[in-house]
Image 1 (cartoon, rainbow over the protein chains, first blue to last red):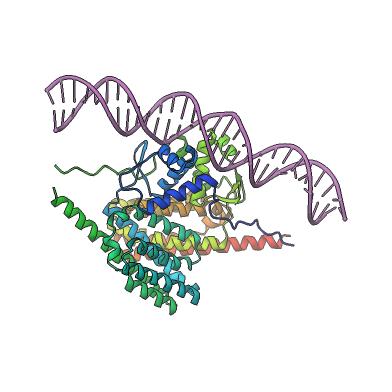
Image 2 (cartoon, each protein chain N blue to C red):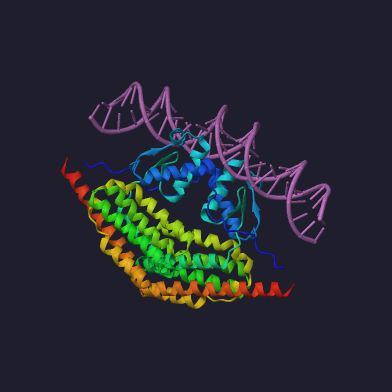
Length: 234
Length: 234
DNA sequence: TTCACATTTTTGTTGCATCAAAAAAACATG
DNA sequence: CATGTTTTTTTGATGCAACAAAAATGTGAA
């Protein structure tokens, strides 16, 4: 009988007890806006914050630097980066390419259950906006997007996209709540759902790309307004 | 005077003495085919191999796992992965999206000097193939591609693409030298150069996408042939 | 105040020991 | 031989200390 190749199913990271835990924890904090651009993160600080020793804390920071969620501002100093417009543009371009791809591939697996899940997330977004729970709206928006991307069945693609969201996440929270208020995404989300129903790959891609572009314009605008206000205030 | 925002130019990784060195070294070895799929890598082995202590060795392995260049086959075992067809397909899709993007963006910066550089690399590829230095041909092929992508001016995009090349790199060497022999890329490379000369973004993208697709077909074919041979040999 | 320089404090890197857990080897049993 | 079981060996994670290097702070001159 033919020997089966070794089982290599476990491509994902081992939940390395502390190191992985510290990484996830810090990632969550970054996305939730626990830190502001410019904040300095030290091994010892993270170590105390999470009550682990230096090694897992160091692992977490290292990995966040690899992700681009933290950057070196000097040889021994990592900070939460200020997202410059050029960074945002680069990330947006990559998002268009990768999330567009994921959306196009998602139609293959667009079952009724999947559609219903999307409807549910959209309902949650709408409800959150109605009740001015902007933070929740942002969260459900992420759920909506990744529910689609997950249908692509491409784990590494998912991971890359998640890294891109992480990178904007930190600076993103600075724009709260104007950004969530705008409801810019509703129409695009509807289009995306319909595209999945019709199993139209091009339409799904277009809907997601539109959503990303609209979001980018929003962010740029709000960001510019703030800068304007800051300047005139001096 | 307006305070300039902190200089955050240094987005790249600090050349952390040993840890970064170990990572680069192992990366190079993987690309060069020093290890075969299935090989087990341990901290202590890497530590001795590079004559550093466990910490930098561990850092290097961790990072390669994040890149996907190594995977866990069990809780305490990292190996060089066997690239399955589904993996290759996923990577190819991502390559099409990201390298297509980079190619399209490259035309903005397609100076004469840049074009000349490309011509030079292509000449090196051709020369290497003529002289049956297939390994060099592979190397110059990489130089050619990244010379184009670098013109996009997007550092993170570059980094992501590099990670994808790293992932195929290891299994790639198993297909040597049939893969390099085929000269599949020459025509596509010429098209890419012409597209840059004409500053035609769509054409540049098409040329690179074609190259990637042709390469994918080649790999699939050679890989299938080998499997066939292995089966009939028993 | 601003700038250059000296001093003090903080910090990341590295190496290493420990230990539970996993892998590999040895062994026994059918 | 194959297969399940026990024993031995190997392994990664973790915590920690030492130290050089960098950052922060303090100081003084212009």
